[in-house]
Amino acid sequence: MRRSLRRVAAWVLLLAALGIGSTGCASSGTAPAAAAASSAQRGPDGLYRNLDNPDARPSQDAWTIWRRFLFQKKDGTVPVDAIPVRKLDRAALDALDPAANHVIRLGHSSHLLKLHGRYWLIDPVFSERASPVQWAGPKRFHPPPITLAELPPIEGLILSHDHYDHLDVATIEALTARVQRYFVPLGVGERLRGMGVAAEAIEEFDWWQASRHGAIGLTATPAQHFSGRTLWDRNRTLWAGWIIDSGGQRIFYSGDSGYFPGYRQIGERFAGIDLAMMENGAYDAYWPAVHSTPEQTVQAFKDLRAKLLYVVHNSTFDLAFHTWRDPLDRIAALAEAQALPLATPEIGEVLTVGKPRENKAWWKGLR
Image (cartoon, rainbow, N blue to C red; front, side, top):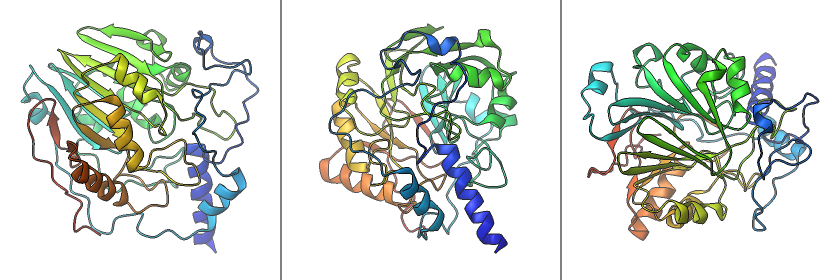
């Protein structure tokens, strides 16, 4: 009985953390001043909206989704065998060519970037669980390849949205003294200020808004998703993807997104994307518009007209009902059948943008 209650409590926390199945009710408080900046996607009710997409299919109702998470048995969603992790240390990072752009996979959507000698983070989550508490909720399949204490000083930290598997309180609090500047969608700055980040260190972006930090150019791009950290604050903050320009190379990070026509717009506005870091995981027929299936990820990559497809949002947390290997198996088969350039790096692997590499199906043979 106690185990069953803990399982129910864990899934309640998961649903609250990810906002799945919430009714979309807004909190009664006023929106933060920074979030009140002009945005075509912010309605009179103070909530943000996705771009119009007549092809987007609706999610199942809240009770149907809750009931499934609470009572349906899962199979193969958590690996039995150990996920391979390439350990990193400061010396190895500092030895990377400072004249190049490097992307290091930390797990799920978390990445450490070394952009022409300076370090950046994308959606860093170092906690054991993607949850509002650390006694329940989705638990990591593997440790991070480097500890928080070993991270170098961070020039910039980029966030896509405020869900717990992308915005982690413990990680943000641990890094406040080592991050120079934060780049976030509208409204997320208020979250960071509540975690002890100085207001003057935060820059908030609407979709298509651009800025520069030193030699790095940043543009927030549309995504088809939602936001919220409780069942009562859904869509009070914006969600986004990002274009990162560094030394003549262009990196795209999708954040979390279902497939939508916006990918074609991004590809038209930002020609010559060298690396497209695309969401590929946590998809389900019960919520078809907010995450992309592998087939949709491939189509989005084609819409972007990018040079290399790098898949993220898998292999670290159990967030849906597909097996943990399904995103990788399907995307690899699609890429092979369509002769698409694919990167499925191991946790801790360093990818140097524009440099030839041999892609390995590291998950094959793992249970």
